[in-house]
Length: 456
Image 1 (cartoon, rainbow, N blue to C red):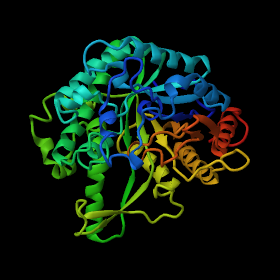
Image 2 (cartoon, one colour):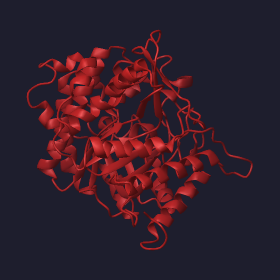
Image 3 (cartoon, rainbow, N blue to C red):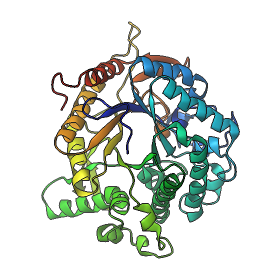
């Protein structure tokens, strides 16, 4: 059962999220080995302006101050990730004692400050030795992850009640092995499909380890989901929207919550009918009941058929007003509708919005503050969408804003600022933005009352 210790009166936990590679830095300290992202970021043209995550937010050295700031802002829950490359540099064998000590201190530090940790086991930092052996397209990587998670649970499992196995398998498979946008930068759809299955298998193996070693933990997988609709009511747009839904959502939802990939997904990816890839027992492991369903959501997708598009014969159209600086739509109703859809069509498990946020052109003004009214409006809309979804029947029990602070945003380097806290990277100064104070006050108002006002 998901821990409700940090929940408001309506049963919703409000928190913030980060990921190890994006904030820690210290890539060659504390026994950490290279991940495939360390290798990828050295490739010419891989990262905007040739930037890297060698230091980023320097959270490895500044975590105490960062947690103090989080506590001062009244944030009751923190979703963080453990670096596989820091905990097990070779991808196999014993855990690195210095890595274990770092995360033990970090998790205890959360608890000491009244912050409930939600811990992600894999947020894309695959140890380079496993990447050299083929990475996620090969089954042995999933098996290595299973062995790794058993060790992590034994060492750190008692320090957190809520665990996420895999973050955004679509990105760790298709953006990494088909679209060439993320580590290791490959462009082979067959590799991506195999990676997707093995990431889901890794989830199943990790869940089985929790059930065996720490059965009282609440465990789930986080998927990146968009509301996908046809651009028009033309048969061509409808057909392509169905295909896009199979590629982007159903590939990852169906096996976890329905126990099968399904005809529509297998029609798009016939590799999944190969018994050498999807072996006997795989889907039973993948679909073993978890404790919650994680949903990452950033944008609303309209699909328009276009025979000239190199992307499967369709284009993803953004037409909603007020786009973010990444040109993603600002459509809270899409999150509301998506949460209802997942709860009605896929699972009756509690839902946690494990990431949602926006990037804008933030900068300090002469008064020394960072005023981000666009993000304040964005958060007001999306948090309201969560509250309304719960009132309308979706069992939403958590919302985590991406991100606590500005950080290394993968291939976009430092050009995208998602944080509630501004980071001046040359000096490492932290400046809470107006949105951080808005979120502080929003959480306080939600948690301050049981029966006053409308907490829905």
